[in-house]
Length: 565
Image (spheres, rainbow, N blue to C red):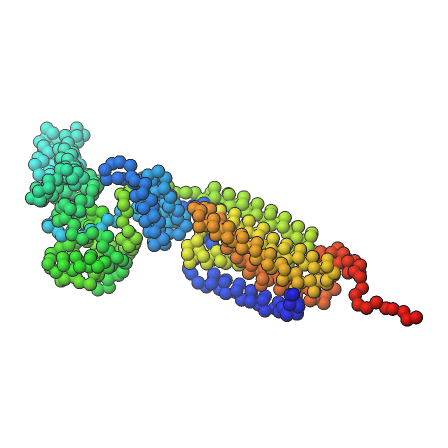
């Protein structure tokens, strides 16, 4: 049997709910640096879609297993870098990254291979700038432009070849030929790196081939991309570094980047520069310690995707598994490098084949249509409640409004704390949750009617009706939450947003029903106001009349009166 209505203290429940709302919105308005609005998904606010095309070293189709592994690593990078609301999906041999808002530049760096290796520097030297074709000299003036490469002769400077506009073509031709020669030399050097078969297994021949490639390398990306190709860890390597102003001849790799256990960026106040701090695993720490002990005052190159990011001189043995990468990084560059090293190397090489901006116009139009549909549905619920439950219907409307207040605040905080973004599917989940919340009120009110039909007053029906209704409400919400949880765990993409908002709204529905709806109904049942105590104003007039008739029709209880003879 339910406890009497007097045992419930509605004021305490309502005060506790008010405290929750105050605390919630204190967090919304006084914590975080963002606006007090939920974060929106790409379909509502627009964003960037980046397509990364996989490149297999042997030229064939990338293995599906490697693609899945790459997608998983990129997804971990997304979570680590803090790019919220991002989707990472496979489309054939492409990985498609969709980023909401203005975070597209970060998405374009997520496909970096981040293959780090440590090599000993054989030699290094500054890059000689490649002379650009000079403008035609004035008529009769000898050209002073130097040849573009060794062996290229200076252009003719005789008056016969100079003067007027006709001198332009002959004047530029030798420079163009020199550029072509440089291209061929770089192509030859690149072929030595891209094709392992061209490199003999003889170490002396490997070293000779590497020196030839080193001599031809000029690190000018406008002429040829010298960094395209395989990084053969067991062979010498020529590479560019220091913003393409230095070139290096390197020995085979002695320590792979997979031996890194952690990476972070920081500011070196002593040298006034941003650095990347590395921690090695057990074997990596031992190898690095042995190398630095034997190569004091020699250079070690940190090679990332065949690019030398830093080549410091070893001042002393570095033991303990901790070291730094320096390379004139900006704060963003240091953080990006630390993140990609921390979250793993990709099994495949990727190139950004497409990066497009997604407009939110269509999404906002869909959102507007969805909100209109939700508003019409909510209005229909209001009209039904007012027509069928009258004053109790007002309590339903008030409870729905308070439920929306809590849901809104929670969405704002979730956007700040875990990067949750609200998309169209999430809005659909919120609209459907209106029906779940209204259903809880209907269960409660109909249970009250059942009690009143049995002949009880409204005041006495409230505790008994709530005791029985809450079990049904809990069972119904448990089923809804379980369905949402299973859908969230098994689904992908937008369906997760739908399941998340549906499950969250179901939980908050219980908070409102227990802390607001039931206490308010209890307060109305105890009210001494004639207006509130009138069953007709509560939509209970017909059931109370039926209850009175049933009560009057019951046989009298107790001992019958017997007349004495």
